Length: 200
Image 1 (cartoon, rainbow, N blue to C red):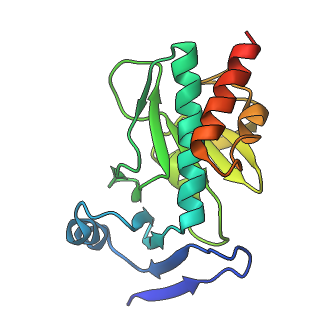
Image 2: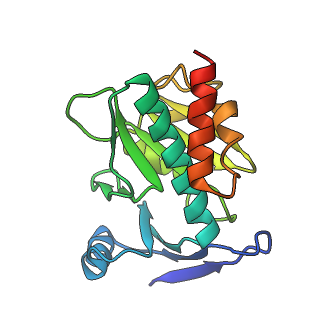
Image 3: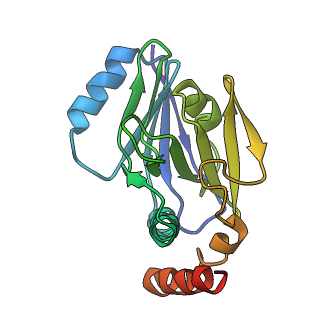
């Protein structure tokens, strides 16, 4: 029998909408993805029988897109191979995991699956994203929370908090974070590029 909960947060004025269903089989998760199709607007995640449906808020989407544009600007300025896959659906049936991150990238060139996921924590609650992405084998998970980016590197089957990215070791994450709340993304990216050039 399916059980569900609605997660309401009283913090932000523009909260994400989130519903979590429990007791969901993998086939039901696959069916939900098929029904939704390519339509945007909601993200679906699955972790060992729990299915999360999130409708990200406007503020959530603005923050994740600003971070994406800043990181992409850094890769462009430094000549790093950096392939973006947005919110692509990642799945691993044997491990009962599926996710659609805010942003994901393949860093360092070559072929393969994304090795960097960026997520924004805007409202509380939801599935354990560290367990979810660790099970999907994502090398690094960056989490924006309360004005800063925290970086987690996969060690075995768990994430370990690290002081800087190992995929992008030259990136000053504290510097990048200073530009996330600039109201204009265009202004933020231009100012960030200028700061990078000034650093040499």
